[in-house]
Amino acid sequence: TMTICKKMQDAFNAQIEKEFWSSNLYLEMAFWFRARGWKGFATWMFKQSEEEREHAMEMAKFVLSRGGEAKVTAIEKVPTEFECPKSVFEITYKHEQEVTELINKLADVADDEKDRASANFISRFIDEQVEEEETVKDILDCFAINGDHAIGIIDHHLGKME
Ligand code: MG
Image: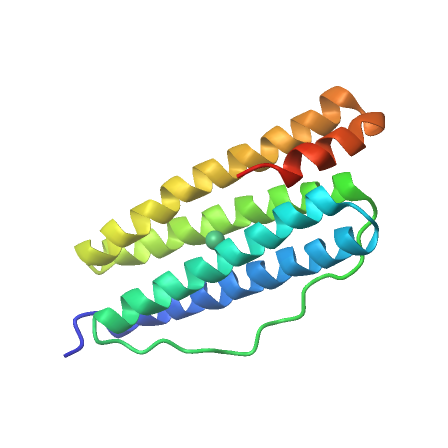
Protein backbone atom coordinates (compact mmCIF):
# COMPACT_ATOMS: atom_id res chain seq x y z
CA THR A 1 0.00 0.00 0.00
CA MET A 2 1.02 3.55 -0.68
CA THR A 3 2.16 5.21 2.55
CA ILE A 4 3.68 8.21 0.83
CA CYS A 5 1.36 10.92 -0.50
CA LYS A 6 1.39 11.86 -4.17
CA LYS A 7 2.74 15.35 -3.51
CA MET A 8 5.74 13.94 -1.61
CA GLN A 9 6.28 11.23 -4.22
CA ASP A 10 6.28 13.81 -7.02
CA ALA A 11 8.67 16.06 -5.08
CA PHE A 12 11.07 13.13 -4.66
CA ASN A 13 10.84 12.28 -8.36
CA ALA A 14 11.67 15.90 -9.25
CA GLN A 15 14.69 15.71 -6.92
CA ILE A 16 15.75 12.35 -8.38
CA GLU A 17 15.84 14.02 -11.80
CA LYS A 18 18.06 16.79 -10.36
CA GLU A 19 20.39 14.24 -8.76
CA PHE A 20 20.82 12.51 -12.13
CA TRP A 21 21.45 15.91 -13.73
CA SER A 22 24.12 16.61 -11.08
CA SER A 23 25.63 13.19 -11.76
CA ASN A 24 25.83 13.99 -15.48
CA LEU A 25 27.28 17.45 -14.78
CA TYR A 26 30.12 15.97 -12.71
CA LEU A 27 30.65 13.18 -15.25
CA GLU A 28 31.01 15.79 -18.01
CA MET A 29 33.46 17.73 -15.81
CA ALA A 30 35.41 14.51 -15.16
CA PHE A 31 35.65 13.87 -18.91
CA TRP A 32 36.69 17.50 -19.49
CA PHE A 33 39.48 17.25 -16.88
CA ARG A 34 40.63 13.82 -18.07
CA ALA A 35 40.85 14.97 -21.70
CA ARG A 36 43.19 17.77 -20.58
CA GLY A 37 45.46 15.65 -18.40
CA TRP A 38 44.10 16.73 -15.02
CA LYS A 39 43.87 13.20 -13.63
CA GLY A 40 43.32 14.14 -9.97
CA PHE A 41 40.47 16.53 -10.71
CA ALA A 42 38.97 13.91 -13.04
CA THR A 43 39.14 11.21 -10.35
CA TRP A 44 37.45 13.52 -7.84
CA MET A 45 34.70 14.40 -10.32
CA PHE A 46 34.09 10.75 -11.25
CA LYS A 47 33.55 10.05 -7.54
CA GLN A 48 31.17 13.00 -7.22
CA SER A 49 29.23 11.77 -10.22
CA GLU A 50 28.82 8.33 -8.67
CA GLU A 51 27.73 9.87 -5.37
CA GLU A 52 24.99 11.89 -7.06
CA ARG A 53 23.75 8.78 -8.83
CA GLU A 54 23.67 7.01 -5.45
CA HIS A 55 21.59 9.87 -4.04
CA ALA A 56 19.07 9.41 -6.86
CA MET A 57 18.97 5.66 -6.25
CA GLU A 58 18.53 6.04 -2.49
CA MET A 59 15.65 8.45 -3.01
CA ALA A 60 14.03 6.14 -5.58
CA LYS A 61 14.36 3.16 -3.25
CA PHE A 62 12.84 5.17 -0.41
CA VAL A 63 9.81 6.16 -2.53
CA LEU A 64 9.39 2.53 -3.66
CA SER A 65 9.72 1.19 -0.11
CA ARG A 66 6.72 3.32 0.83
CA GLY A 67 4.58 2.00 -1.97
CA GLY A 68 5.12 4.94 -4.31
CA GLU A 69 6.41 4.99 -7.86
CA ALA A 70 9.84 6.22 -8.94
CA LYS A 71 10.28 7.56 -12.45
CA VAL A 72 13.20 7.80 -14.84
CA THR A 73 12.78 10.91 -16.95
CA ALA A 74 14.72 12.59 -19.73
CA ILE A 75 17.65 14.46 -18.22
CA GLU A 76 18.36 17.93 -19.56
CA LYS A 77 21.73 18.47 -21.24
CA VAL A 78 24.58 19.62 -18.99
CA PRO A 79 27.21 22.27 -19.91
CA THR A 80 30.14 20.84 -21.88
CA GLU A 81 32.51 23.79 -22.21
CA PHE A 82 34.54 25.15 -19.31
CA GLU A 83 37.11 27.93 -19.06
CA CYS A 84 39.68 26.52 -16.68
CA PRO A 85 39.96 24.15 -13.68
CA LYS A 86 39.16 26.92 -11.20
CA SER A 87 36.01 27.92 -13.07
CA VAL A 88 34.81 24.29 -12.99
CA PHE A 89 34.96 24.40 -9.19
CA GLU A 90 33.23 27.78 -9.11
CA ILE A 91 30.38 26.26 -11.13
CA THR A 92 30.41 23.23 -8.80
CA TYR A 93 30.17 25.44 -5.71
CA LYS A 94 27.26 27.42 -7.14
CA HIS A 95 25.55 24.20 -8.18
CA GLU A 96 25.90 22.67 -4.71
CA GLN A 97 24.36 25.81 -3.20
CA GLU A 98 21.41 25.38 -5.56
CA VAL A 99 21.10 21.71 -4.59
CA THR A 100 21.01 22.77 -0.93
CA GLU A 101 18.05 25.04 -1.76
CA LEU A 102 16.28 22.15 -3.50
CA ILE A 103 16.86 19.75 -0.61
CA ASN A 104 15.54 22.37 1.81
CA LYS A 105 12.42 22.72 -0.33
CA LEU A 106 12.02 18.94 -0.36
CA ALA A 107 12.17 19.05 3.44
CA ASP A 108 9.50 21.79 3.38
CA VAL A 109 7.15 19.47 1.47
CA ALA A 110 7.73 16.73 4.07
CA ASP A 111 6.94 19.25 6.84
CA ASP A 112 3.83 20.53 5.06
CA GLU A 113 2.58 16.97 4.59
CA LYS A 114 3.52 16.04 8.17
CA ASP A 115 5.47 13.14 6.65
CA ARG A 116 7.92 12.34 9.43
CA ALA A 117 9.49 9.34 7.67
CA SER A 118 10.36 11.53 4.67
CA ALA A 119 11.57 14.39 6.87
CA ASN A 120 13.83 11.96 8.73
CA PHE A 121 15.13 10.47 5.48
CA ILE A 122 15.81 13.92 3.98
CA SER A 123 17.71 15.14 7.07
CA ARG A 124 20.71 13.04 6.01
CA PHE A 125 20.83 14.91 2.71
CA ILE A 126 20.69 18.23 4.57
CA ASP A 127 23.80 17.16 6.53
CA GLU A 128 25.39 15.93 3.31
CA GLN A 129 24.94 19.35 1.67
CA VAL A 130 26.77 21.08 4.52
CA GLU A 131 29.70 18.74 3.87
CA GLU A 132 29.53 19.15 0.08
CA GLU A 133 29.56 22.94 0.27
CA GLU A 134 32.44 22.92 2.77
CA THR A 135 34.53 20.56 0.63
CA VAL A 136 34.13 22.61 -2.56
CA LYS A 137 34.69 25.87 -0.65
CA ASP A 138 37.95 24.40 0.69
CA ILE A 139 39.05 23.60 -2.85
CA LEU A 140 38.25 27.16 -3.99
CA ASP A 141 40.16 28.53 -0.99
CA CYS A 142 43.12 26.40 -2.09
CA PHE A 143 43.04 28.05 -5.52
CA ALA A 144 42.73 31.50 -3.94
CA ILE A 145 45.53 31.02 -1.40
CA ASN A 146 48.03 29.18 -3.59
CA GLY A 147 47.38 30.78 -6.94
CA ASP A 148 47.39 29.27 -10.40
CA HIS A 149 50.97 27.98 -10.16
CA ALA A 150 49.85 25.50 -7.47
CA ILE A 151 47.19 23.96 -9.66
CA GLY A 152 49.26 20.81 -10.26
CA ILE A 153 49.56 20.26 -6.52
CA ILE A 154 45.81 20.73 -6.00
CA ASP A 155 45.15 18.28 -8.84
CA HIS A 156 47.47 15.72 -7.24
CA HIS A 157 45.93 16.25 -3.80
CA LEU A 158 42.33 15.90 -5.01
CA GLY A 159 43.13 12.68 -6.82
CA LYS A 160 43.99 11.14 -3.45
CA MET A 161 41.04 12.55 -1.51
CA GLU A 162 38.48 10.11 -0.12
MG1 MG B 1 23.34 14.98 -4.33
